[in-house]
Length: 391
Length: 97
Image (cartoon, rainbow over all chains, first blue to last red; front, side, top):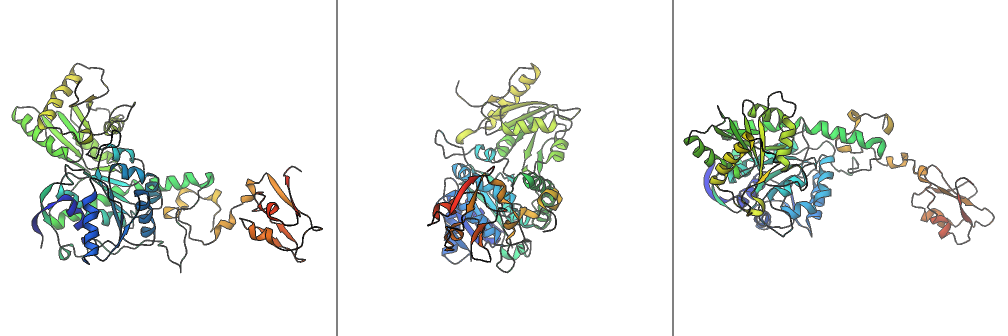
Protein backbone atom coordinates (compact mmCIF):
# COMPACT_ATOMS: atom_id res chain seq x y z
CA UNK A 1 0.00 0.00 0.00
CA UNK A 2 1.27 3.44 -0.80
CA UNK A 3 1.48 5.82 2.12
CA UNK A 4 1.76 9.55 2.44
CA UNK A 5 4.97 10.66 4.09
CA UNK A 6 6.94 13.85 4.44
CA UNK A 7 10.37 13.47 2.92
CA UNK A 8 13.19 15.39 1.30
CA UNK A 9 13.16 15.00 -2.48
CA UNK A 10 16.74 13.70 -2.45
CA UNK A 11 15.74 10.87 -0.08
CA UNK A 12 12.72 10.09 -2.26
CA UNK A 13 15.07 9.60 -5.22
CA UNK A 14 17.32 7.28 -3.20
CA UNK A 15 14.26 5.34 -2.10
CA UNK A 16 13.11 5.04 -5.73
CA UNK A 17 16.51 3.60 -6.68
CA UNK A 18 16.19 1.16 -3.77
CA UNK A 19 12.68 0.15 -4.87
CA UNK A 20 14.06 -0.42 -8.36
CA UNK A 21 16.55 -2.79 -6.69
CA UNK A 22 19.64 -1.30 -8.28
CA UNK A 23 22.73 -3.52 -8.42
CA UNK A 24 25.42 -0.87 -8.65
CA UNK A 25 25.66 2.76 -7.58
CA UNK A 26 28.88 4.54 -8.58
CA UNK A 27 28.79 8.16 -7.55
CA UNK A 28 30.80 11.11 -6.34
CA UNK A 29 29.15 13.56 -3.96
CA UNK A 30 28.55 17.09 -5.22
CA UNK A 31 26.19 19.83 -4.03
CA UNK A 32 23.21 19.83 -4.45
CA UNK A 33 23.09 16.11 -5.32
CA UNK A 34 24.90 14.97 -2.15
CA UNK A 35 21.92 13.81 -0.12
CA UNK A 36 20.84 11.38 -2.83
CA UNK A 37 24.05 9.35 -2.87
CA UNK A 38 24.68 9.84 0.85
CA UNK A 39 21.32 8.20 1.50
CA UNK A 40 22.07 5.38 -0.94
CA UNK A 41 25.45 4.69 0.68
CA UNK A 42 23.66 4.44 4.05
CA UNK A 43 21.07 2.05 2.64
CA UNK A 44 23.84 -0.19 1.29
CA UNK A 45 25.93 0.05 4.47
CA UNK A 46 22.90 -0.77 6.63
CA UNK A 47 22.08 -3.82 4.54
CA UNK A 48 18.74 -2.40 3.39
CA UNK A 49 19.85 -2.41 -0.23
CA UNK A 50 21.81 -5.31 -1.68
CA UNK A 51 23.98 -3.32 -4.09
CA UNK A 52 27.59 -2.44 -4.75
CA UNK A 53 28.28 1.18 -3.80
CA UNK A 54 31.44 2.27 -5.62
CA UNK A 55 33.13 5.28 -4.01
CA UNK A 56 34.95 6.73 -7.00
CA UNK A 57 37.47 9.57 -7.08
CA UNK A 58 35.63 11.82 -9.55
CA UNK A 59 32.52 12.11 -11.69
CA UNK A 60 34.52 11.02 -14.73
CA UNK A 61 35.25 7.81 -12.86
CA UNK A 62 31.65 7.59 -11.64
CA UNK A 63 30.25 7.53 -15.16
CA UNK A 64 33.08 5.24 -16.33
CA UNK A 65 32.29 2.75 -13.55
CA UNK A 66 28.59 2.97 -14.43
CA UNK A 67 29.47 2.24 -18.04
CA UNK A 68 31.30 -0.92 -17.06
CA UNK A 69 28.70 -2.19 -14.65
CA UNK A 70 25.84 -1.48 -17.04
CA UNK A 71 27.68 -3.21 -19.88
CA UNK A 72 27.95 -6.25 -17.61
CA UNK A 73 24.16 -6.23 -17.28
CA UNK A 74 23.84 -4.72 -13.80
CA UNK A 75 21.07 -2.24 -13.04
CA UNK A 76 23.12 0.91 -12.56
CA UNK A 77 22.31 4.25 -10.96
CA UNK A 78 24.20 7.45 -10.31
CA UNK A 79 23.51 11.10 -9.61
CA UNK A 80 25.37 14.33 -10.11
CA UNK A 81 25.02 18.08 -10.62
CA UNK A 82 26.61 21.06 -12.35
CA UNK A 83 30.39 20.76 -12.54
CA UNK A 84 30.11 17.02 -11.87
CA UNK A 85 27.97 16.55 -14.96
CA UNK A 86 30.57 18.48 -16.95
CA UNK A 87 33.38 16.28 -15.67
CA UNK A 88 31.38 13.25 -16.88
CA UNK A 89 30.83 14.88 -20.24
CA UNK A 90 32.85 12.68 -22.60
CA UNK A 91 31.70 9.45 -20.95
CA UNK A 92 28.02 10.46 -21.29
CA UNK A 93 28.34 10.19 -25.05
CA UNK A 94 29.90 6.74 -24.78
CA UNK A 95 27.11 5.49 -22.49
CA UNK A 96 24.54 6.61 -25.07
CA UNK A 97 26.35 5.32 -28.13
CA UNK A 98 26.94 2.00 -26.36
CA UNK A 99 23.18 1.89 -25.59
CA UNK A 100 23.67 1.27 -21.86
CA UNK A 101 20.53 1.74 -19.72
CA UNK A 102 22.10 3.74 -16.90
CA UNK A 103 19.75 5.93 -14.86
CA UNK A 104 21.09 9.22 -13.54
CA UNK A 105 19.51 11.97 -11.48
CA UNK A 106 20.83 15.45 -12.13
CA UNK A 107 20.14 18.04 -9.41
CA UNK A 108 20.39 20.95 -11.83
CA UNK A 109 23.05 23.46 -10.87
CA UNK A 110 24.65 26.52 -12.41
CA UNK A 111 28.08 26.19 -13.98
CA UNK A 112 31.09 28.14 -12.76
CA UNK A 113 32.16 30.89 -12.89
CA UNK A 114 31.67 32.59 -10.71
CA UNK A 115 31.53 29.46 -8.61
CA UNK A 116 27.90 28.79 -7.80
CA UNK A 117 26.30 25.70 -6.29
CA UNK A 118 22.68 26.81 -6.74
CA UNK A 119 20.15 25.88 -9.34
CA UNK A 120 19.71 26.69 -12.99
CA UNK A 121 19.72 24.74 -16.25
CA UNK A 122 23.14 25.54 -17.67
CA UNK A 123 24.39 22.05 -16.77
CA UNK A 124 21.47 20.36 -18.58
CA UNK A 125 21.88 22.46 -21.68
CA UNK A 126 25.61 21.76 -21.89
CA UNK A 127 24.87 18.03 -22.21
CA UNK A 128 21.87 18.49 -24.50
CA UNK A 129 23.45 16.60 -27.38
CA UNK A 130 24.95 13.65 -25.49
CA UNK A 131 22.31 11.18 -26.74
CA UNK A 132 20.60 10.38 -23.44
CA UNK A 133 16.87 10.42 -22.89
CA UNK A 134 16.28 13.46 -20.68
CA UNK A 135 13.25 14.79 -18.84
CA UNK A 136 12.38 17.41 -16.24
CA UNK A 137 10.53 17.00 -12.96
CA UNK A 138 9.07 19.71 -10.77
CA UNK A 139 8.66 18.31 -7.26
CA UNK A 140 9.48 15.37 -4.97
CA UNK A 141 6.54 13.26 -6.12
CA UNK A 142 7.38 13.67 -9.78
CA UNK A 143 11.05 12.87 -9.33
CA UNK A 144 10.21 9.80 -7.22
CA UNK A 145 7.69 8.49 -9.78
CA UNK A 146 9.78 9.34 -12.79
CA UNK A 147 12.97 7.84 -11.36
CA UNK A 148 11.10 4.53 -11.06
CA UNK A 149 9.83 4.94 -14.62
CA UNK A 150 13.36 5.76 -15.81
CA UNK A 151 14.59 2.22 -15.11
CA UNK A 152 11.64 0.69 -16.95
CA UNK A 153 12.15 3.02 -19.91
CA UNK A 154 15.93 2.67 -20.11
CA UNK A 155 15.90 -1.12 -19.95
CA UNK A 156 13.01 -1.66 -22.36
CA UNK A 157 14.32 -3.79 -25.27
CA UNK A 158 12.94 -1.17 -27.69
CA UNK A 159 14.85 1.59 -25.90
CA UNK A 160 18.17 0.59 -24.29
CA UNK A 161 19.36 4.15 -23.79
CA UNK A 162 20.55 5.86 -20.62
CA UNK A 163 18.06 8.20 -18.97
CA UNK A 164 18.74 11.49 -17.20
CA UNK A 165 16.10 12.68 -14.72
CA UNK A 166 16.40 16.40 -13.99
CA UNK A 167 15.23 18.18 -10.87
CA UNK A 168 16.09 21.67 -9.73
CA UNK A 169 18.97 21.80 -7.28
CA UNK A 170 17.93 23.05 -3.82
CA UNK A 171 14.54 24.37 -5.00
CA UNK A 172 13.43 20.73 -5.21
CA UNK A 173 16.33 18.55 -4.10
CA UNK A 174 16.54 19.90 -0.53
CA UNK A 175 12.86 20.54 0.11
CA UNK A 176 10.79 18.34 2.40
CA UNK A 177 7.49 17.64 0.67
CA UNK A 178 4.52 15.32 1.04
CA UNK A 179 5.06 12.15 -0.97
CA UNK A 180 2.86 9.20 -1.87
CA UNK A 181 5.54 6.62 -1.33
CA UNK A 182 5.22 3.26 -3.06
CA UNK A 183 6.41 0.02 -1.57
CA UNK A 184 7.87 -3.11 -3.12
CA UNK A 185 4.53 -4.91 -3.15
CA UNK A 186 2.89 -2.04 -5.01
CA UNK A 187 5.41 -2.23 -7.81
CA UNK A 188 4.83 -5.95 -8.39
CA UNK A 189 6.66 -6.47 -11.67
CA UNK A 190 6.38 -2.86 -12.86
CA UNK A 191 10.10 -2.95 -13.61
CA UNK A 192 10.99 -6.32 -15.21
CA UNK A 193 14.33 -8.06 -14.82
CA UNK A 194 17.12 -6.37 -16.74
CA UNK A 195 18.16 -8.32 -19.84
CA UNK A 196 20.68 -6.77 -22.21
CA UNK A 197 21.07 -8.32 -25.67
CA UNK A 198 24.89 -8.49 -25.36
CA UNK A 199 26.07 -8.23 -21.74
CA UNK A 200 29.76 -8.66 -21.03
CA UNK A 201 30.18 -12.39 -20.47
CA UNK A 202 33.39 -14.43 -20.71
CA UNK A 203 31.44 -17.25 -22.35
CA UNK A 204 30.06 -14.96 -25.06
CA UNK A 205 32.79 -12.40 -25.62
CA UNK A 206 31.79 -9.02 -27.08
CA UNK A 207 33.58 -5.70 -27.35
CA UNK A 208 31.85 -2.53 -26.15
CA UNK A 209 33.06 0.97 -26.96
CA UNK A 210 35.00 0.07 -30.07
CA UNK A 211 36.94 2.03 -32.62
CA UNK A 212 34.83 3.50 -35.45
CA UNK A 213 36.90 4.80 -38.36
CA UNK A 214 35.44 7.13 -41.04
CA UNK A 215 34.18 4.15 -43.04
CA UNK A 216 31.66 3.18 -40.31
CA UNK A 217 31.27 6.16 -37.89
CA UNK A 218 28.45 7.86 -39.85
CA UNK A 219 26.47 4.61 -39.98
CA UNK A 220 26.88 4.16 -36.20
CA UNK A 221 25.66 7.71 -35.54
CA UNK A 222 22.69 7.32 -37.88
CA UNK A 223 21.74 4.03 -36.20
CA UNK A 224 21.90 5.74 -32.77
CA UNK A 225 19.71 8.64 -33.87
CA UNK A 226 17.17 6.38 -35.56
CA UNK A 227 16.95 4.35 -32.35
CA UNK A 228 16.56 7.35 -30.03
CA UNK A 229 13.74 9.18 -31.83
CA UNK A 230 11.09 6.42 -31.54
CA UNK A 231 11.81 5.90 -27.82
CA UNK A 232 9.18 8.59 -27.22
CA UNK A 233 6.50 5.98 -27.83
CA UNK A 234 7.85 3.72 -25.09
CA UNK A 235 8.32 6.67 -22.74
CA UNK A 236 4.67 7.66 -23.24
CA UNK A 237 3.53 4.05 -22.77
CA UNK A 238 5.53 3.59 -19.56
CA UNK A 239 4.15 6.84 -18.14
CA UNK A 240 0.66 5.72 -19.13
CA UNK A 241 1.11 2.35 -17.44
CA UNK A 242 2.40 4.14 -14.35
CA UNK A 243 -0.60 6.45 -14.46
CA UNK A 244 -3.04 3.55 -14.83
CA UNK A 245 -1.49 1.68 -11.92
CA UNK A 246 -0.67 4.47 -9.51
CA UNK A 247 -2.97 7.31 -10.53
CA UNK A 248 -0.42 9.91 -11.57
CA UNK A 249 -0.16 10.39 -15.33
CA UNK A 250 2.84 12.12 -16.90
CA UNK A 251 3.08 13.37 -20.48
CA UNK A 252 5.88 14.70 -22.70
CA UNK A 253 4.19 18.10 -22.81
CA UNK A 254 1.73 19.12 -20.11
CA UNK A 255 -0.56 22.11 -20.13
CA UNK A 256 -2.25 24.33 -17.56
CA UNK A 257 -5.26 26.51 -18.38
CA UNK A 258 -4.36 26.57 -22.07
CA UNK A 259 -7.97 26.33 -23.26
CA UNK A 260 -8.80 29.58 -25.12
CA UNK A 261 -5.42 30.98 -24.00
CA UNK A 262 -3.87 33.60 -26.27
CA UNK A 263 -0.55 33.88 -24.48
CA UNK A 264 1.29 30.80 -23.31
CA UNK A 265 4.29 30.51 -21.06
CA UNK A 266 6.74 27.69 -21.71
CA UNK A 267 8.85 26.58 -18.76
CA UNK A 268 10.59 23.51 -17.36
CA UNK A 269 11.21 22.17 -13.88
CA UNK A 270 10.04 23.63 -10.61
CA UNK A 271 9.42 27.16 -11.91
CA UNK A 272 6.35 25.81 -13.66
CA UNK A 273 4.73 25.73 -10.21
CA UNK A 274 5.52 29.42 -9.76
CA UNK A 275 4.21 30.13 -13.25
CA UNK A 276 0.91 28.43 -12.40
CA UNK A 277 0.31 30.91 -9.56
CA UNK A 278 0.93 33.74 -12.00
CA UNK A 279 -1.45 32.18 -14.54
CA UNK A 280 -4.19 31.95 -11.90
CA UNK A 281 -3.69 35.58 -10.97
CA UNK A 282 -3.68 36.70 -14.60
CA UNK A 283 -6.84 34.68 -15.30
CA UNK A 284 -8.51 36.34 -12.31
CA UNK A 285 -7.78 39.66 -14.00
CA UNK A 286 -9.34 38.44 -17.24
CA UNK A 287 -6.11 37.76 -19.11
CA UNK A 288 -6.12 34.74 -21.43
CA UNK A 289 -2.90 33.22 -20.13
CA UNK A 290 -1.82 29.58 -19.97
CA UNK A 291 1.24 27.43 -19.37
CA UNK A 292 3.08 24.69 -21.25
CA UNK A 293 5.32 22.51 -19.13
CA UNK A 294 7.99 20.94 -21.26
CA UNK A 295 8.68 17.64 -19.53
CA UNK A 296 10.42 15.51 -22.14
CA UNK A 297 13.55 17.23 -23.41
CA UNK A 298 15.18 14.40 -25.38
CA UNK A 299 13.87 13.05 -27.64
CA UNK A 300 12.14 16.40 -28.21
CA UNK A 301 8.35 15.95 -28.40
CA UNK A 302 7.78 17.89 -31.62
CA UNK A 303 4.21 16.70 -32.34
CA UNK A 304 2.98 17.16 -28.77
CA UNK A 305 4.56 20.60 -28.58
CA UNK A 306 3.06 21.77 -31.87
CA UNK A 307 -0.35 20.52 -30.73
CA UNK A 308 -0.03 22.32 -27.42
CA UNK A 309 0.74 25.71 -28.97
CA UNK A 310 -1.73 25.49 -31.84
CA UNK A 311 -4.15 28.40 -31.65
CA UNK A 312 -1.98 30.49 -29.34
CA UNK A 313 -1.01 33.99 -30.47
CA UNK A 314 1.96 34.57 -28.20
CA UNK A 315 4.56 32.32 -26.67
CA UNK A 316 6.74 33.45 -23.76
CA UNK A 317 9.62 31.04 -23.26
CA UNK A 318 11.38 31.12 -19.92
CA UNK A 319 14.94 29.77 -20.02
CA UNK A 320 17.24 29.16 -17.06
CA UNK A 321 20.38 29.10 -19.17
CA UNK A 322 22.03 31.30 -21.78
CA UNK A 323 23.87 30.42 -24.96
CA UNK A 324 26.56 33.10 -24.83
CA UNK A 325 26.83 35.10 -27.98
CA UNK A 326 23.99 33.11 -29.50
CA UNK A 327 20.26 33.50 -29.98
CA UNK A 328 19.38 33.58 -26.26
CA UNK A 329 18.05 30.68 -24.21
CA UNK A 330 18.64 27.18 -25.60
CA UNK A 331 15.03 26.03 -25.06
CA UNK A 332 13.58 29.03 -26.86
CA UNK A 333 16.05 28.50 -29.67
CA UNK A 334 14.76 24.94 -30.13
CA UNK A 335 11.14 26.01 -29.91
CA UNK A 336 11.63 28.67 -32.59
CA UNK A 337 13.19 25.97 -34.72
CA UNK A 338 10.41 23.46 -33.99
CA UNK A 339 7.75 25.95 -35.08
CA UNK A 340 9.56 27.52 -38.01
CA UNK A 341 7.84 25.48 -40.70
CA UNK A 342 4.35 25.89 -39.22
CA UNK A 343 2.05 27.94 -41.43
CA UNK A 344 0.51 29.65 -38.42
CA UNK A 345 2.85 30.09 -35.55
CA UNK A 346 2.72 32.29 -32.47
CA UNK A 347 4.97 35.28 -31.90
CA UNK A 348 7.78 34.13 -29.61
CA UNK A 349 9.63 36.07 -26.94
CA UNK A 350 12.36 34.78 -24.69
CA UNK A 351 13.14 35.63 -21.07
CA UNK A 352 16.15 34.36 -19.21
CA UNK A 353 16.18 34.25 -15.45
CA UNK A 354 16.50 32.15 -12.34
CA UNK A 355 20.23 31.86 -12.93
CA UNK A 356 22.51 30.50 -10.24
CA UNK A 357 19.70 30.01 -7.73
CA UNK A 358 18.08 33.46 -8.16
CA UNK A 359 14.41 33.17 -7.35
CA UNK A 360 11.67 34.15 -9.75
CA UNK A 361 8.40 35.16 -8.10
CA UNK A 362 4.85 34.83 -9.42
CA UNK A 363 4.83 38.64 -9.78
CA UNK A 364 7.88 38.40 -12.05
CA UNK A 365 6.03 35.91 -14.25
CA UNK A 366 3.21 38.43 -14.46
CA UNK A 367 5.78 41.10 -15.36
CA UNK A 368 7.11 38.82 -18.09
CA UNK A 369 3.57 38.38 -19.38
CA UNK A 370 3.03 42.12 -19.81
CA UNK A 371 6.53 42.90 -21.05
CA UNK A 372 6.38 39.95 -23.46
CA UNK A 373 3.14 41.21 -24.96
CA UNK A 374 4.63 44.70 -25.22
CA UNK A 375 7.66 43.35 -27.11
CA UNK A 376 5.33 41.54 -29.50
CA UNK A 377 2.81 44.36 -29.96
CA UNK A 378 5.48 47.01 -30.53
CA UNK A 379 7.53 44.57 -32.59
CA UNK A 380 10.66 45.48 -30.62
CA UNK A 381 13.95 44.19 -31.99
CA UNK A 382 14.93 42.14 -28.93
CA UNK A 383 16.54 38.69 -29.10
CA UNK A 384 15.82 38.00 -25.43
CA UNK A 385 15.50 39.81 -22.10
CA UNK A 386 16.93 38.94 -18.73
CA UNK A 387 14.42 39.05 -15.89
CA UNK A 388 15.40 40.17 -12.42
CA UNK A 389 18.85 41.52 -13.20
CA UNK A 390 19.92 44.85 -11.68
CA UNK A 391 20.53 47.41 -14.41
CA UNK B 1 31.04 -11.00 -39.63
CA UNK B 2 29.19 -11.09 -42.92
CA UNK B 3 29.60 -7.70 -44.56
CA UNK B 4 32.80 -5.72 -44.62
CA UNK B 5 32.77 -2.26 -42.99
CA UNK B 6 32.43 -0.45 -46.30
CA UNK B 7 29.40 -2.57 -47.26
CA UNK B 8 27.43 -2.05 -44.06
CA UNK B 9 24.44 0.33 -43.94
CA UNK B 10 23.28 1.90 -40.68
CA UNK B 11 20.64 -0.85 -40.46
CA UNK B 12 23.43 -3.43 -40.19
CA UNK B 13 25.05 -1.81 -37.12
CA UNK B 14 24.75 -4.02 -34.04
CA UNK B 15 23.01 -2.29 -31.11
CA UNK B 16 25.46 0.05 -29.40
CA UNK B 17 27.99 -0.59 -32.19
CA UNK B 18 28.96 -3.62 -30.14
CA UNK B 19 31.33 -6.06 -31.80
CA UNK B 20 30.09 -9.60 -31.22
CA UNK B 21 32.97 -11.38 -32.91
CA UNK B 22 36.03 -11.80 -30.69
CA UNK B 23 39.41 -10.89 -32.15
CA UNK B 24 38.15 -9.14 -35.25
CA UNK B 25 40.70 -6.36 -34.80
CA UNK B 26 42.90 -8.68 -36.89
CA UNK B 27 40.79 -7.74 -39.91
CA UNK B 28 41.86 -4.13 -39.64
CA UNK B 29 44.63 -3.37 -42.13
CA UNK B 30 46.94 -1.23 -40.01
CA UNK B 31 49.55 -1.59 -42.78
CA UNK B 32 47.73 1.33 -44.46
CA UNK B 33 49.25 3.66 -41.86
CA UNK B 34 52.83 2.81 -42.91
CA UNK B 35 55.26 5.29 -44.46
CA UNK B 36 58.37 3.28 -43.60
CA UNK B 37 59.03 -0.45 -43.50
CA UNK B 38 61.57 -2.76 -41.90
CA UNK B 39 64.17 -4.68 -43.97
CA UNK B 40 65.49 -7.80 -42.26
CA UNK B 41 69.15 -8.79 -42.96
CA UNK B 42 69.50 -12.61 -42.72
CA UNK B 43 73.30 -12.28 -42.64
CA UNK B 44 73.13 -10.45 -39.29
CA UNK B 45 70.01 -12.13 -37.82
CA UNK B 46 70.68 -14.63 -34.99
CA UNK B 47 66.99 -15.74 -34.79
CA UNK B 48 66.65 -14.45 -31.19
CA UNK B 49 63.05 -13.21 -31.79
CA UNK B 50 63.41 -10.04 -29.75
CA UNK B 51 61.91 -8.10 -32.68
CA UNK B 52 58.80 -10.31 -32.61
CA UNK B 53 58.42 -9.90 -28.84
CA UNK B 54 58.56 -6.10 -29.02
CA UNK B 55 56.37 -5.70 -32.13
CA UNK B 56 53.19 -3.94 -30.87
CA UNK B 57 50.92 -5.37 -33.56
CA UNK B 58 52.29 -8.19 -33.21
CA UNK B 59 53.02 -9.00 -36.84
CA UNK B 60 56.61 -10.33 -36.89
CA UNK B 61 56.79 -14.10 -37.24
CA UNK B 62 59.53 -16.61 -38.02
CA UNK B 63 59.69 -18.39 -41.38
CA UNK B 64 60.40 -22.11 -41.85
CA UNK B 65 64.13 -21.51 -41.39
CA UNK B 66 63.60 -19.48 -38.21
CA UNK B 67 64.34 -16.06 -39.71
CA UNK B 68 61.97 -13.25 -38.75
CA UNK B 69 59.99 -10.94 -41.04
CA UNK B 70 57.10 -8.48 -40.65
CA UNK B 71 53.69 -9.12 -42.23
CA UNK B 72 53.09 -5.85 -44.08
CA UNK B 73 49.27 -6.23 -43.82
CA UNK B 74 49.61 -5.08 -40.21
CA UNK B 75 53.11 -3.53 -39.95
CA UNK B 76 52.75 0.23 -39.27
CA UNK B 77 56.46 0.88 -39.78
CA UNK B 78 56.91 2.06 -36.19
CA UNK B 79 60.55 0.98 -36.09
CA UNK B 80 60.48 -0.57 -32.63
CA UNK B 81 61.89 -3.85 -34.05
CA UNK B 82 64.89 -2.02 -35.55
CA UNK B 83 65.44 -0.12 -32.30
CA UNK B 84 65.39 -3.31 -30.20
CA UNK B 85 67.41 -5.65 -32.50
CA UNK B 86 70.70 -6.41 -30.67
CA UNK B 87 72.49 -7.20 -33.94
CA UNK B 88 71.32 -4.17 -35.97
CA UNK B 89 69.88 -6.64 -38.45
CA UNK B 90 66.78 -4.51 -39.15
CA UNK B 91 66.85 -1.32 -41.17
CA UNK B 92 63.90 1.05 -41.56
CA UNK B 93 63.53 2.40 -45.09
CA UNK B 94 61.09 4.82 -46.68
CA UNK B 95 58.23 3.05 -48.45
CA UNK B 96 59.14 4.39 -51.90
CA UNK B 97 62.55 2.74 -51.68
